[in-house]
Amino acid sequence: MIKISNKYFWLFNLLFVAGAAWFVCQISILFIQDRLKTSPPLGPGQGSAFKAEKPQAYERYGTIPERNIFNPSERGLKLIPLGDRRAGKRPKNMEAAQLSSSGSLRLVGTVTSQSGRGWAILQEEKDRKQRLYPIHGRVDDGKIVNIARDKITIQSGGKNEVLALSSDKVAGSPPSKPTTSAKEKEAVQKLSTNRFVVNREDVVGMVGNINQFMTQARIKPHFVSGRPGGFAISEIVPGSFFEKIGLRNQDVIKKVNGQPVNKPEEIFQAYSQLIRDSNIELEIERNHQSEVLRYEIR
Image (cartoon, rainbow, N blue to C red; front, side, top):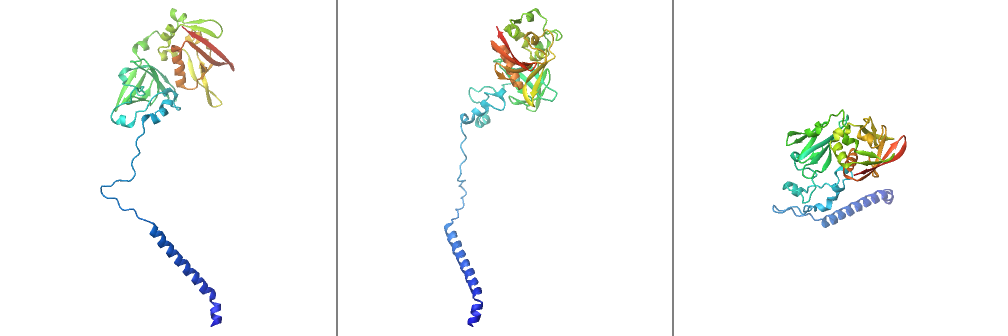
């Protein structure tokens, strides 16, 4: 009997350990269940314990669109807070990111490309402020769906509205002789190789229609190692404004008043400076060398 007990003692040991482990597990389960408390069911009149976060004031996030690091041409625009949008109101002192009505807008010019990209320059008749809009850009409650050389199409409320260049701007002087008047001959005075005096009144008259202005030369993006490096000028019409201000074929415009010019909206800003500012410095690359052309606009 003793021999049998010794022979199977390990089996009794194993059963004892297994039983002890099972007993400890059961005690642990009972202990945990006692500590856990089930939340009482919500009554019919009770809602969720979590409350919706209160909407933040516009000032908390308004600086994001105003700085607009992704589209410099629309810096300063403001979003419409959701509450005001539902009520059909706009924030006070809000600069028109979406202009009031196409009836109060005038198409100043367009920029088109073979790739299908395009931009429209619209002017608010009230304050005569001009803005650059890309294709598919928002204008009030509509969207620009097509940009052609002399017109754009705005889709609003399921209808298409065509906004064309003003007839007086389109007609003007014959395109074959855009720069031969006596006034234009006096528009630019050359003081030295890189210094010029430009008559503001004559310049405003010449560049008032950007489409006609851009027929005097061909401007296309210039790339260096695959990256934008300004805009190259070619096919300058002899005797045109471009030639009078000292530009030559194959020149590359790099900077205007120290600011790089790599995007269409930056070209538009430079175009606006030509009309508005009194002194302009144009940094160009000519024959792989940098030169600066200086203009005084009177």
